[in-house]
Picture 1 (cartoon, rainbow, N blue to C red):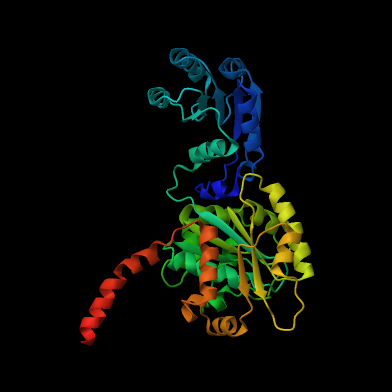
Picture 2: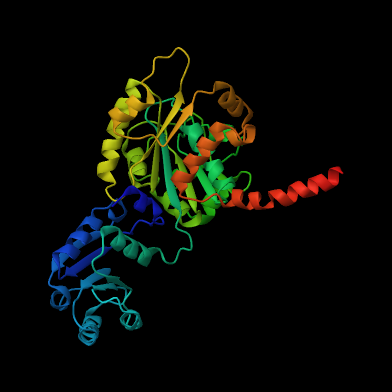
Length: 413
């Protein structure tokens, strides 16, 4: 599947810790389900694939409890399928969900199956992502929001990844009119509070260090409202304690943010540990920020290799080249960097110390200092590529521009 088609899909929530058993009639369907079972979003689920279709399922559950989810491929006629499903219903536990797949693309069949308690019908052949979307939908249907998780990190310390992340979140919230939360996960040295000119007393640390009491209400209280539709979970940026986390330490927080906020941007500090790798692998979109030197090139190649192999059903990360063209600094050209890394940069941001320095010192975004500048446009393009959003707010403003211009002219006259 091409990366563009992956990006075009809406975000899918991870499948919870369930047991699923599939009974297939064709090798193609079995391969699709097995491939889906290896996806990052199915890591909590235990999936077994068997051949034999509905007959094998009836035999398997004659004297054993049914799992949380049963997937059955059947080429039977409508009437035969209904009769066999009624037999299966007698064996199923009350909380077992059933997904049927078959070649018939028939709305009447679909309605009959739903009326008899079948949770979903998939038309064969289907791919791993089609199966993932169906199963994810079964267990996230109670949530009105399935937010997109975006992770931004640097290929090396000091590449400006946090600055890119903070400005990207600003554009997603303000120009693409999307409720956005940014979580600063550099707990000891994070700069999100400084960049947004906020100094809240609580933030991401209170959520991570209180896993037993974390819920939607707690996260909502910890979020600091910035201008418009942007909210912030800042880092404490204190060194009174060390910040050592287990691999899944951030999972409860991410799960809640995903179901409450349409877009969640994670500012992940440079490093390579179990929890940072997990967040990068499990994000819906990833951006890696690099500068044009040899150490960054080596790290970009290594990071892309790991993430590509761990995210086989996702678009590859975006590479953002930052601080290019520093006077008197020996650099690898962007073209040579891209060729050696095997990645075409999604954006190339030039070295502008005056602009970025003023923004950092004043607690402002680039869009607030130079809204029509080239750098602002580059950051907006990054925001669009990562979020997949359309510039709705800008379109609305453009439609009103002629009217506003006439009114100003009348007032001046």
